[in-house]
Length: 172
Ligand code: ADP
Image 1: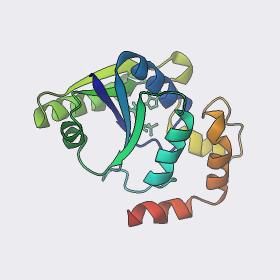
Image 2: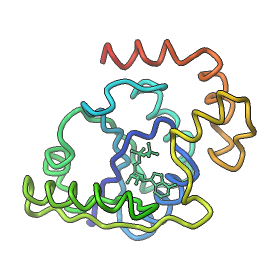
Image 3: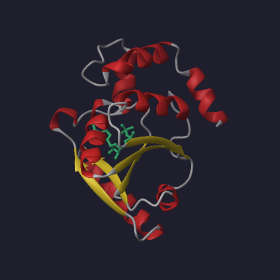
Image 4: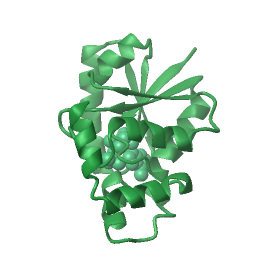
């Protein structure tokens, strides 16, 4: 069984993430989308629990995709879940530099672990969760950026200022 992990913040999941999820799910037997709560981005707009629910909502039709959340190092999470592949999406050369460093670090922590990079579809190359949050703050149309099932939730959360989300994730 080839199990892969796609780790990230997913705050919130975008069409760029979903494209990588679908393509990775077609390559591997099982894909675990793991919301990593890391020290670099301790709080966010959505709590980790909410982010999981959003990813679940947009991957319902993908039977080999599982959604999880972790506070541990990704390499430890992979070892514990007996996964030997990490999937990462690459948008630009700027992503490459930090991702290659992370890939080498993860291989040092868990030598059986390899990182597979999937290039972004050009139409999503500019897309990030940060861009989505910024657009939502200005009330822009989000339909080209996030899956339609979650547009309302993103809009509502940003309108509330995300304060409940921030408090939520600090407690966890
Ligand atoms: P961000 O907050 O920048 O959207 P995440 O930490 O949630 O990023 O991203 C998780 C993974 O998904 C990373 O490997 C990142 O490079 C990748 N990714 C993010 N957005 C895209 C996109 N538009 N196309 C391809 N890969 C992406």
